[in-house]
Image (cartoon, rainbow, N blue to C red; front, side, top):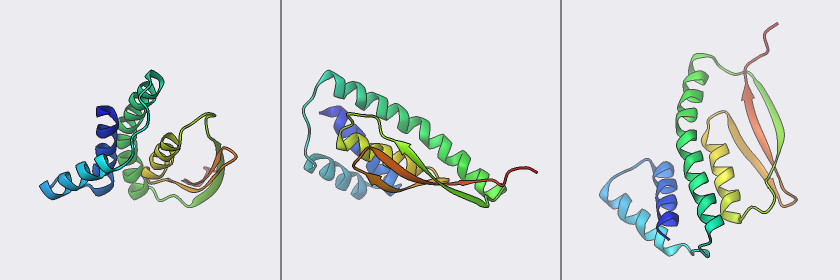
Length: 127
């Protein structure tokens, strides 16, 4: 339960970027109001893996933002990414959040068949 609470608060603070007392209180209230799933060892492993992905995504997002400022990207593409089989709805949400959190990528659509449509920016290929 503590792990779910921490994950929800981390996502809340990433979304709001505000560490004021009012925002902390609102985030804790929302984290407690959202329903909790069963606690199994596999879910705990998934939760720890998700926290690791969040920690790795934050520097990547900053690097991509600086890269977009210094070298504008003129090429766009829409790619299809497969979802790992057996993912819970929370894990799918976290995947979509992490993909969209980085400035160069946005999830356009999630298909129930198990894939995402991802819009991606890239630099023009060197000639």
